[in-house]
Amino acid sequence: MKSIYRSIPSIDKILNHPKLLSLKKQQTRNLQLYFARKIINSYKEIQSEATNIPAIDEIVDEIVKNIEHLKIPSMKKVINATGVILHTNLGRAPLSSKTSQIMHLINSNYSNLEYDLTTGNRTSRLSHLEELLRFLTNAESALVVNNNAAATFLVTTALCKDKEILISKGESVEIGGGFRVSDIIKESGAQLTEVGATNKTYVEDYQKAITSNSAALLKVHTANFKIIGFTEAVGLEEMTKLAHKNNLYMIHDLGSGCLIDSSKYGLTHEPTVQESIKADVDLVLFSTDKLIGGPQAGIILGKKELIDSIKIHPLARALRSDKASIAGLTTTLLHYINNEFETEIPIWKMISRKIEDIQETAKKWISMFPDSELVPGNSTIGGGSLPGETMSSWLVAFGKNINLSPYEMAKKLRNYQPIPIIGKIQHDRFFIDPRTVLHEEEADLEDAINHILFNN
Image 1 (tube, rainbow, N blue to C red):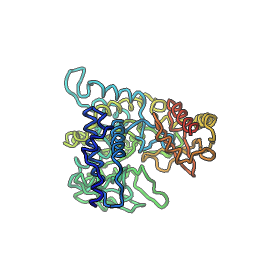
Image 2 (image 1 turned 90 degrees about the horizontal axis):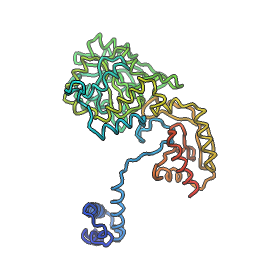
Image 3 (image 1 turned 180 degrees about the vertical axis):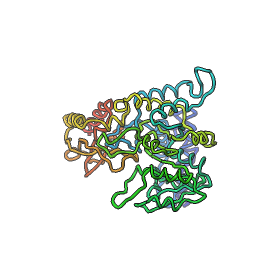
């Protein structure tokens, strides 16, 4: 191993290389030192004598490359041509232009976040949202936190700590990133007790499991998977009656949340927030960056007495939503109140888009792109919403006669500047789906694909 160490240049020798000395700014010098140490340490961790240490010129080039890469923000706009409407890896729901504008305005200036302009007194940041949510859902009260997992954690901590929560075995689900509902509730200090079987749970299963230590029944909408076949589940109204009969809380984790009837768009009916409130649940919890189509947040709706007690819990402040999210969510909810969600909220534009319009766009593209073909296909909702649901679409397919493999084309497009394009590969062909490409993005997509095809 000593022979490897002897071939590693010193930090001083690297920093005194002419190429690095020519970059004189102190910030750059500090970055040079940072990356020089990082690279040298990585070589010292090598356990094989067969490894060759690069020449000092190569090390310097790597340092310069790392500095240049660090100075460019890594998060950037991409065009989603995958056909997955709520693409978790691509940031879920894009926001309406009005929502984006108000979030930028509030972030760039002072605002009346917790200030009553009429009285000049301090007020709650929730005042901007509560009336909108009550109007849309008929709930008594509302609380907004930073996401739905936070909503679950806060509710179960505030109401069920050291107590028992009953849940169907088939609803003890895993959400994104490997996190499980059971783990979140365990951290809240509550005990989660599973009842029934994975595919069948009856009301008697809940009744038999209720003890003097039970605090709540929890129903979790399985928004990211579907069990079909030999199944049985207890309806929300029946569970609510059972909970209240036994002086327990009825909590409904609705997951993706939906304010309108999805069946009018040819999709399976997604349970709505209004239906949960109508079923007389005590609390319903859901996300706002999925089927709501707004910025990331988690909403807790339900009985005023319970929400008032949750609002004063110390965790409520730790998990509260920020000013930009509140402003953006307010604007998003106004799109529903004004009945303009189909024209203003991007995901509902995509869901409600006519198949004839999609086909027209796809035909325009195949007339522009060499060796492309119009093929029928399907878009998906994605984002842990409406599992297994697809919508008919028309796709543009590449890959039979162009001089790029589908994988090469996908790589070139996702690294394209200034705006990367993300498509999908199926059956050894590269596809783009017009449904998820916003009208204002079409020209950029066309330029990128033509550049890749004609400059290959």
